[in-house]
Image (cartoon, rainbow, N blue to C red):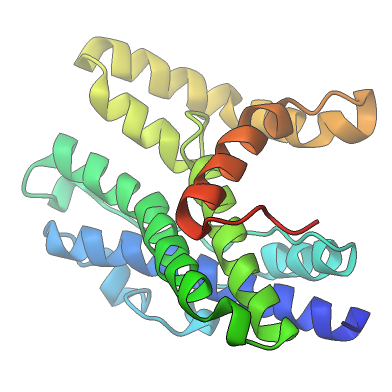
Length: 214
């Protein structure tokens, strides 16, 4: 496969996967009584409604480097409009990672059924859909703001503990997350890779019955 074709496939998979993730948040919020995302045009499966300029640039650069990662604009949510604020916020946060796991499951089943009969490009794309969506789901479940896991964790804590945790994450969460992302390049300590790699490979094998491609 040419480098250009591989790059285009990685970009396509990333954009679709991130779009599904953000749409799932918007849909869950709408069903819970908050139409903020709908009013902002985010209740949509059009990638252009979700892409963030810096996140897209990062997707291009990382895809050119051969792996691919990026982000979209956060879906605007107003918990004050939820019917059951605490539990609805939990459900809205969970539906982002869940949507990626469901997409991985669907693509994994297609890979199981049709993989041997597909051309190398199509097989590669399905495999990428599976591994990227598993990685997105697991990464977003980490309980560090602004990731979905921080909202999930806060909703499961007693109210006083949740408030203290949210205040701490509001001040330090993004700094902690950036530090974890840049540590491999600065100090050669890949904390995120150590946490995520084995679970991601295990889920990939469970979904597809295959070992991930290099």
